[in-house]
Image (cartoon, rainbow, N blue to C red):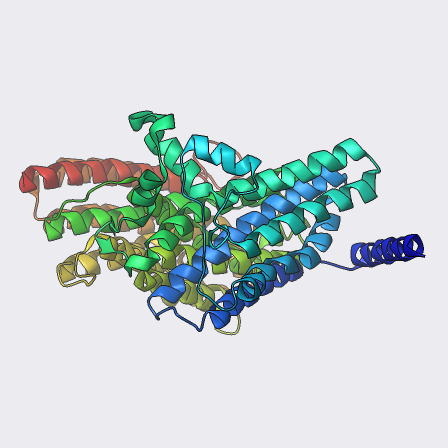
Length: 555
């Protein structure tokens, strides 16, 4: 009788799994479903605890939870696909329903400890003790660090992984390997601060000499990110781990996309417009450099400051990629004429999937920026707004001469402001010379039409009246080239540095010649598509002279 019930249970589970595997799923629906579970988990554990977080603590705690579980989801997705020998889509369907298990810890802890306050986060320990904890299922103290609820969660995911792999492969050894692998993954994530500390401090102090005290000191000691203080002492661990998880998530997402969707991955890489990526990164760095000069401040470089710099740069890149997706979605007809190799005209993505990808870039750009500073995150949101009204209907301001370039200039100026505020101790623009802000603004307005040269035919056919469309190719070359040369000359007065005369003349001449010699073709070293690289090269060289003379003045 008992065996029949067990048999019926397994038959029911098998039918349930087949039903789950038959469900339709898209990139957008998977991301939304997994994010929903994470939000419910955040609400549940705070509700049970009586909502103890302050308004300053909520963002850092939430971003840490969101990014840590996002990393867990991607690792679990890849692991399940490989061990069970199923497609990544099938593994995604199973993981959506399995992820309900992340709700277990706060519920179990509430009943086990009868409402007493328990601290569930990570285990801080040295290498020797970590090995012991691994062999004893996280060791003692189920009321602190890896609590009883988390251990139930890990045990459940371990058993489910082993069971699903056995059901798909009927291989006991593979099922056992899946159980060991799943437990190892969750143990590694649960003790991650300890491994990070071992990696970065072990070389100095000795790997066997690192203890839990060292880990606590590394992750719980408040410090500044650039010149911005952490929002709260209790949020220190969350902010530091969120920074690490942001980099880890970008790495996992990039590697996973390349591994499972190589055609789509390469298409997005080719479509990223690398000159624009470097341009955006450079604007943030320019703002930071100006803040160091005008605030006359010094910057202490630490591990987490470096990590924050990488995260800010990734946030800016993802903001740019979001604008690329938006632009491509509304420029399909133009791209069919002048950029047929882009993802949508080339049928690499469906429009639905491409939009979902843009949504992911959009959210991650804001989350990454807000880990470092809520103000920086808001500025990046405003950047996204300007990018939207530039490309998207019904406004689509890129159709109107001057206005479209003006909007792009505002977006570029915001990136300089972001960099300046990162290094400004009082986080405002009081020490940013007004004349210099207007110089950047004017330079962006006059020079940004470079990017429209390659799209003249498509823009004209679709009534997008850019400067190159209005003036024609040859006159646009002269106008933009002279504008660049003019900006180099004007910079001598703005920076009040007469020694910049020769570098400004040479870089201006180089840029003007590059404008006139560039070919309107797909192939060649100097074409309308590669022209931004040449212009940015001149700007970079000139920037070195500016920095050199500025350092001379400061010293």
